[in-house]
Length: 269
Ligand SMILES: [Zn+2]
Image: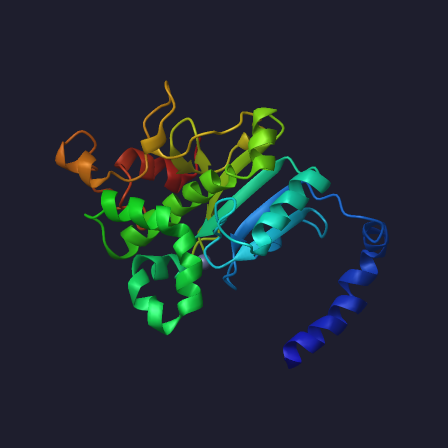
């Protein structure tokens, strides 16, 4: 606590004093341009990693950056989404998962939580679609690889859940809204963004200004003409030999093909 109290004083005499005009302006209203949905994890700091200013991003945080499908819960997520899009007219939404996510670890051993942490268990049930997809399609993975895939697939699942909200659905139809999937890597500080064209998480480029609405994120719900999903190969893909990966040695990217891993690792375009 002492650290926080000292921090309050430091903030008032330092940052606040040197940004007095900004705070005065913000006292009249907020105009954030981004809705940022991420995990409650203390190691993830949306403003720090994006270097956004106060007032720039409207944030929703919870365990596992989960958005319950519309009507599935009476939590604050739906209200915050509605307010962000409808009242604040935000047109960019980012769902940001992160490496080493405790909520995703919990999701992978969901049943063991039922007695020990019943509220966490109930909450994580909203990510059942992620759990089921990972269980059925990535049974050949384990440990860190399995967790990374779960984090990635969960971001895509939550982007889909977002689209069950009428306001999101409607704005996407009007092409007034863009959804982005991000993964923040705690250990390197880098962010990877979901790239719809390659169905892969890659270094963010200029796609932040992409205005194409994204209707489908998972390979299993392909819209006609969409390209194959390129997340790590699933059990099916491995057994039929079409998409077996060739064991890249780059740390943390073992689940990608060598080519993908190189591209992601270098952060090149
Ligand atoms: Zn987390």
